[in-house]
Image 1 (cartoon, rainbow, N blue to C red):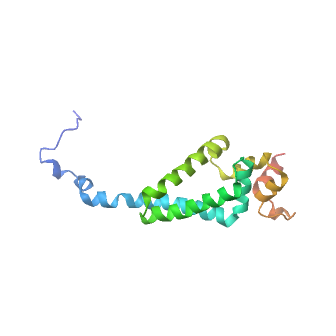
Image 2: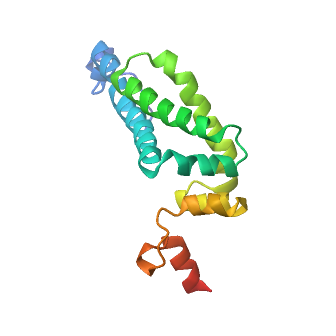
Image 3: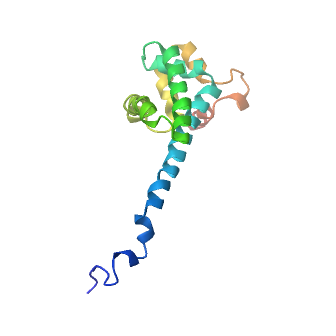
Length: 157
């Protein structure tokens, strides 16, 4: 009774015929480029704004070799690769290093520690005290300057 049957009026008379034309094929990659390019650039700017040395401390806690070099390499890959994807230029060239970054992040950080950036503190739990200090953006003793995670944990104890 409610079967899907081909239209008797022809294939081009469908309500969704516009989805089959060359116009959609030309414009379909635009939202993907915007999302992926912006996402990579945003992560690169976030690492840059918090200081590459803080990201290098996280990499050091994860036992990444040459953490300062790898921190800058990651930041530049995210910024340059994201911008290239956003523009649609050199996508085959920049997609491989970007894919490597994603797989390394998935298997070394996100699967063991979760996808929340607040859980980055657990990455630093085994690091030396100087590495833990690098995670705290401020080193003042006032409660307003303490990381939110330490304030929440203090209330639960």
